[in-house]
Image 1 (cartoon, rainbow, N blue to C red):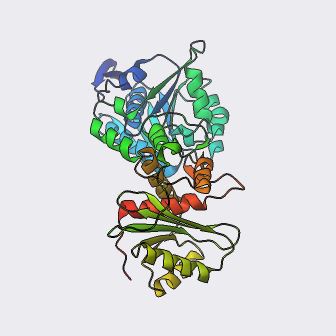
Image 2: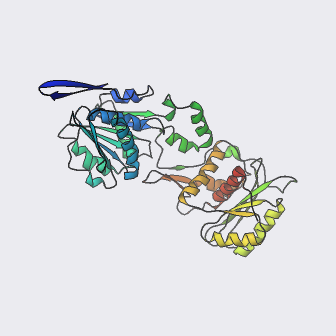
Length: 410
């Protein structure tokens, strides 16, 4: 409940407005806490945007001046829609769509939605409250050089909401909020599953299908190191040996072709048991020879289907392979598709869905493979500088083929 008052012909007319209720999974606790600077790390679908919009509109209804700042103009649209939805239910509101501003005539308070694309333009306004939405993706300059000074004259407050993206300045604010000696700050960490309206089975499905690091960050709201290994507990997956084909078994081959600097790797996997049963690695071998090796390997393993990296020079090689009658399809690498490919392999390894023999180079590359968190907050997978990831890619392609069971058309 928010109470506002206005004078009408010498009399005071009181207006009572009921804002949407906040859930017991942490929203009410954050809203009611007296800290000046509140730092909320929450998993996806926990309800941090809805919480912040209720707080922002509630402040404006009490005559306060509020900015809602998001990393980019498109991302700011999410908060804007929530604010407009709430405001449309309140008498005496007005909306300036061009400025993305919602105001309330009776109290003179307003909420304006801003983009932090250029953090230096966020200057010059005296504010009572700043909401920084997904602030782990915002340049720290926006807060320290533009927005924090804007709160000084009105002794304004700030609410930082985000899913964590590595240990950046948002993490530093979070740590400050855990320090009892810094009483102006308070921080919370709420995983998605603390939202009482989220079906627990949805969380468990995400736990089963997402790579552990991605789940811990996006659902568990945990702060991960900016650089870390991707594949864990590999020793438990080392079993069996390379062996020839068995009758009536279905096999797939993941092929990462290369000619000079990198290595050409072919990984043969039993598509049912998900065991690696064949492995070939070569360097400085002409593509015509590689295609002959691939043709023989596919024929040997019951005409195994092949999934190859067809990016760049791989595209004409794919057409040459098809012309030879090899049952093959291409996987084109983009930043998104490579992430999907690797995260599929991470999930298979995390859940022990595959196994491989003691192949030293394969195991070495898996242990060296790492992720970094980009400035945009995305996970980027690669081998460390100066190392190779051909074995990892070959295994990932075989894993993808076995999981997705492509139908090859010749």
